[in-house]
Image 1 (cartoon, rainbow, N blue to C red):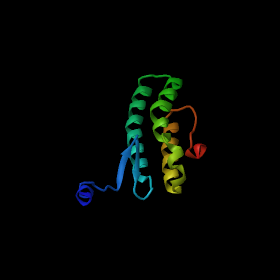
Image 2: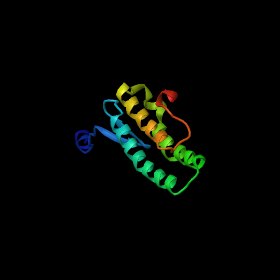
Image 3: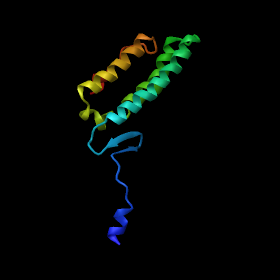
Length: 113
């Protein structure tokens, strides 16, 4: 019976658990790529709100709620596994958001690490 049960268990290389992608190698590339993809979609929505006249203070509040929260979610669990390249990619995204006027201050992932 033991051999039969183990044959039914599928091994995966990456799984989404409570909002974070965990890989069998403890690399968080999949998590970061997916988080930044979602944040890019949300950036488009914020640009629409900005272009329709939403005040910068309100944009900043929405930015913190739907973008910054997504990027920093579960950060204490995976921050020690980040590469310099991954930190740079996140910081580039945050810098663009500031440049577009979607937030009132320049955020950096280094701040939370």
